[in-house]
Amino acid sequence: MKINITIFSVLAAWLLAAIPFASANEVTGEEFKPFAEKHIILQLSDQANEAVVLDTANNLIKNYGGPDMIDIEIVTFGKGVRLLYADSPDAVRIASLVENGVRFYVCKNTLDTIERVHGERPKINPAAIMVQAGVAHIIDRVDDGYILIRP
Image (cartoon, rainbow, N blue to C red; front, top):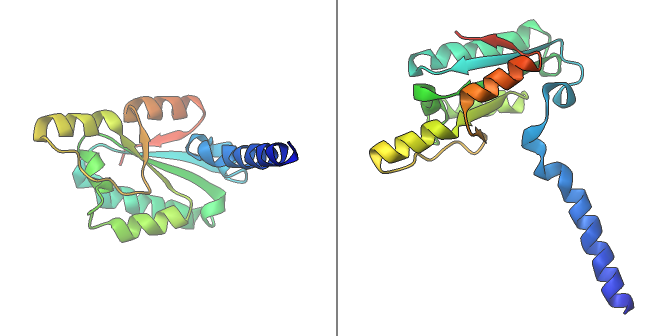
């Protein structure tokens, strides 16, 4: 009987410890970076603007004195999702920005459309966070006080 209680206690403690990790993708900007002066959304819906969006994120981090002082999300949808393909030529830059606290979001609706049209779903960078609708995510974040920038 004592063994069952001990196993149950260990399992319960393990599950409780795992809860914060299960909801890590749902963290708001204020919780993620409590000292951030600004909370920014960079919208990417056109593949031609990939470099500009990445440069803008990098420049904002420098301008505000480091990654802890600015909260940046890059939200991709439409043709902008190509930035987050697993084989993107910008994978190194994306990894560097992720290390500096930038969060990358990819629109699941766009990926569903690509799969429907081309018969195959593209492999996505593992750092990307899936949202059902990129535009709806932007709207929600703007409602939360984020500043939207569309380079």
